Image 1 (cartoon, rainbow, N blue to C red):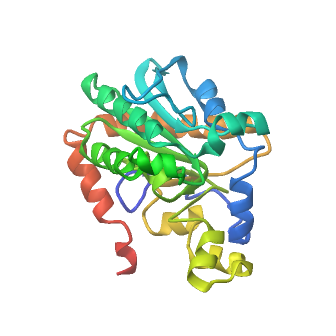
Image 2 (cartoon, helix red, strand yellow; image 1 turned 90 degrees about the vertical axis):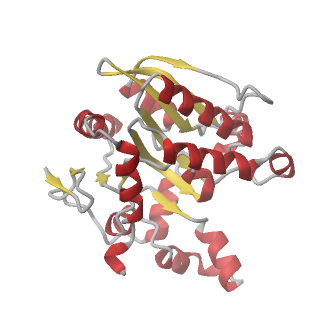
Length: 277
């Protein structure tokens, strides 16, 4: 187990990854409903989880699941995007696209975690925040911005795990962290390859080319210091959970020992991409 370039523990140096997979195939894999979703990770990794609902303002957005639980006898706050396994569940969870109420609920739980000194663990899996008229009317942009501001200023450890599709500000809103774990076939980007090719080239048929240009794979993002470690995927979901459990059990104590973690987070984020300057 070695140190990564940002001085945090890294677990993937000796793992044999297949880096020749076409980036757009990874996008399709990240979107697969067969992948474990946030609810499955919560059930596998935490005990005594209690879901908390509502933003204390407008309502409860089910596309964000948030609550408190125990991780190996450590009280933690858990926040994640929620996707369903069926059409009915996806309709209920708005296909994993949160409204502003979801992000305000997330912010509420973040501030609660700060008050009670609980580490925060987030699970990222969304095509992006919901872009509908009603969401904009209720302050979608402001809700996302407040999450970014709040996460940047917290004095408790934050670990983010990108488990599927991480799209745009909707993903970044719960992704400002001290340590980022990314599944091998998950993606993280400013927008979808379809949107990129349509906006930039006015040609949706160039989607595979867009996926390459966007540098959205775990390996691209690790090279840019956006991601700290990559988890190899397996046909056995239990192995995924065990791999993440192994990382959390080692990284969380390390982060908890940092005296001024807010400053550490600031310098970590400031170093992103400097390898290529």
